[in-house]
Amino acid sequence: MSMNLDEIVDIFEILGDWDQRYQYLVELGEKLPPMPDSLKTDDNKVKGCMSQVWVSAYRDEQDPHRIHFYGDCDTSIIKGVLALLIQLLDGRSAEEIQALDVDEFFRRLKLDEHLSPNRHFGIYALVELMKEKAASLAD
Image (cartoon, rainbow, N blue to C red; front, top):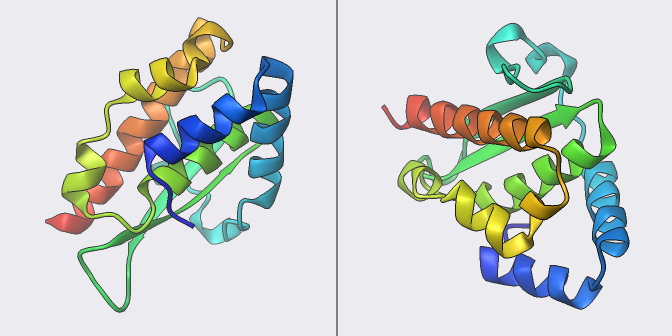
């Protein structure tokens, strides 16, 4: 289910405090469709993240301009952020994916206030890999 940033911000505002938001992220991560083990390769692994994180992109069979993602992570909170990013970017074009402003994402969801600088850096690396995967499919 694809969502835009405004919809995600609305959910976060309804949830109120960080504990509820954290729980929501954990639940989102638990609902992430399983990533095939065959895709958990070095090429799909996010470099610079303390957690083990993988992301893979593939074209939509009906509309090759649309890109979908698989992802997995061994840390519940980062897996939740990954699930959120997949909701935000799944089914979009490579151009739309490139246009994601990670700083705006962090600021509007207030993630920068609650995630350590190391996690922050890892999420930047994750988004960069998602953008790279999308760009390689667009070529």
